[in-house]
Image (cartoon, rainbow, N blue to C red; front, side, top):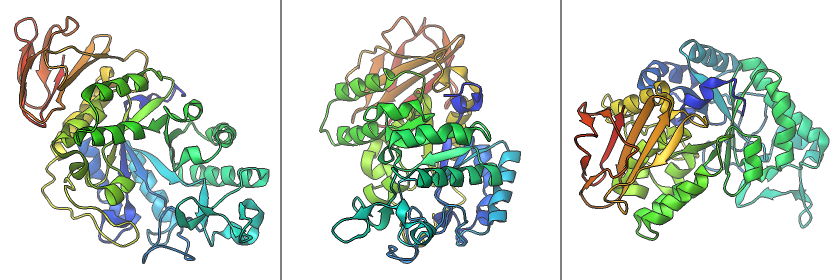
Length: 425
């Protein structure tokens, strides 16, 4: 990780589904929304794929944004290249960083390369046609043993950095592409400007990819918290998993989330998956060591609304965004408090002992004089307990409700089901 890009360690990432964000579904329409997101505390905008969508074998009416027809053009559904450049420019003026989704493993069936360079693709020996990607018949797989294809892919990535001044990529199914490609691509694209790369892989399963990417997914955590909520594993199992993630170290970051475009559409909203644990897990995602990912609409929240993938299905925005202030308070704390920096060896994380360690997750983040204590109820009952750890000392303020707590005088807590407390020293 390039430590000179200090913004990486304090950032958060908000995923934008342009198709569903507004009724218009365009860059220009979304641009009107960014002042609200900035005031909510969002630092980095990640746009789902903005390239044209293949027509051949497309799914549904509009097709998948992850089935590219051309790597160096704009999806006309969203607007023009100039519209996107304008959006990036306006976002930069407001202090945002901008990432775009990059789908390197596969393309759609009528990608321009299928005509100009069919040798760029793997072939199915049974059909002598392009090889269908695993489990997804609207996409075909690229051949990473072809040096010319690899360079063309890198050149396409460089196009977006040079032409639109983006700040990095979220790399779709990064571990489906051999790691030596990313090792080849990273220094070439970083020559234009230092970039942020978020990879869709879990570093516990693919540790070699962590040497290339700034941050990676925590798929295992996301799945385990769901089965924990279904009473299929123990709280100790979850804490053991956290220790495994922590042992990876700070040369890369973990990205924590409760929802994204895939999860919301195919597996359910965070409330469907986690029930009362949805909000404590959102607090965890922002206050644990790493970078938080937020999916558009979670600030509403989308309690039961699953956004369709291949059809027009706008987010049902309303004036009342129930969790706007919740995110604003947490994200602003994450940005300004050095104890919450992700991937910074100076920001230490300590799991804190309580009198209810089988139900409560308490942890202290500390960086020099900055300290943040987070306490989360992971059980399905109301809990009264006390902090039983000498590392928590001094006066802290609850960032949500305001009360000041002197831990020399009072170490007691009460958290209802779904309860949480975040205290800043």
